[in-house]
Length: 362
Image (cartoon, rainbow, N blue to C red; front, side):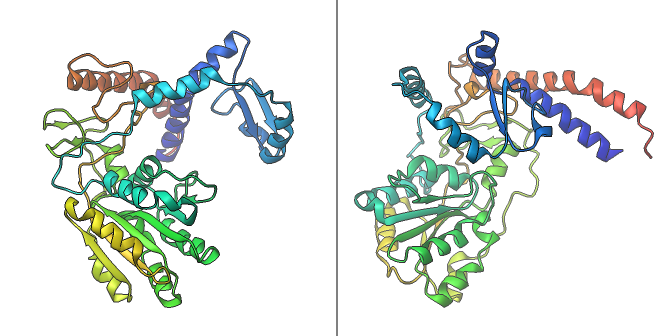
């Protein structure tokens, strides 16, 4: 019965979420001037969750190649204006006033010291907050120089991905930007790099948490050193701080690396960042090196979208959405979350009750 209930709940939630998908395209479809095109190889998946105006069956690569000659070039003025407005509404900002190391600052320093040789730098990442910060604050300029697990979201990808990239391009500087949790998934591959002389550079942003999970599971602990510029209060944003298995009991990453005959550095003071990063990058490119950065634990990735909200309702690091919320941010945010939960209950609970009542399973 539990399995049936869980499956039915997921179907109902999928249907609820489908209502929020691509509202502009849905509006255009109603006006007869746009809509949703669904490329799909399995016919049974068409209109399964999201209703499409034009389903295209078959291999997506083949179909997209066939589509390209039919596209008419245009300046796309409105689209670029939209992108500009989003950048203005949701800038990649963070508070730099902290005694702790900021993860964004670490990546910005890496970006600064490699600015004149981007063609010689390959970045790999694990999966999590560090992956998002890398995408936001490191500016790569050449194809196939940012290697990350985007679709599948495989934690632990960064280190073996860096080894593969370095073997393929030994003359390049290959940097794995990783988080402590993601790095721990495949940390023993560091021994592979050590044994075979694969000169990768591993940058570990260590906050002793599975940071992305913490950010989604519950409350943001707002401290004076956090990027969130509101009072130092504990604000329950999404799931009332019901954390589950998100604290990491990490090993000493410096000693772990040294035990594998790998050079290791540790950054604890923001003032030491330029010198440490310089040493990290200038280390022998034929040998692996690790730099562990003990970062601000309360740092979060912005902008982000609350569960079951449109992309247009994203919030930035000041807990503001665009257009701005009412003056009392905390009150309005809490009220919105409560309304959101009520809306979910209103849509789901009648169906759940009906399922439980009619089920004949033990």
